[in-house]
Length: 66
Length: 205
Image (tube, rainbow over all chains, first blue to last red; front, side):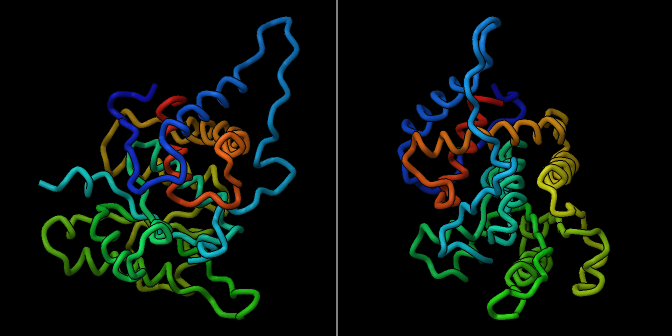
């Protein structure tokens, strides 16, 4: 959990998915990345976005420049 | 007394092109992880406001500003530079200089690829806090964290290396998160991205 002296603030604006949906997705994905127990085969990891394949921009075409 | 909204908001004035994406997202993540609220002109895409009015309002709403002036290259198609970042930096400095009350207490961080490069194209800003990130998201995180630590006096902030490690972990989570949310990573809006960062930090940091 975040330190009490460093509260993570909620942003402005409405996301395109509900907050419950985002929370559920964050929990589910966090579960996928938990380290495997000793003796068990490690789960296949999703590739790091910063690895060999160059990530694509998050910006939609209308947001593509400033 | 400044409103809590003003005192914790950071206006991020950066390029939005795909070449800068990694640094931009790292800066947004660092601001959120330090307990501040990242704001930027991309919010405008989600509203019906006139762009200039929204930028005025954003700058007025934010005590802090991070201004990246590294994008001096010519656009491949137009062979012209983008002037929005220096323009919005000028608006921020103008609000600080001519504004009332809390506006005068605005604090800005100027980022560039190299520390003294600005002297060749924007020498009027000499004397401001200018830091270099060398195009490296990890270094950008460290610079932003150190600046926020210095201006907030908050000793509870995590170190830059810790935030950078958290950011690397978050980046691994983004593709499956987008899959779960039926969103394409390339099409995430700023608002979606900041909400995902926020909820991820609340649960993972």
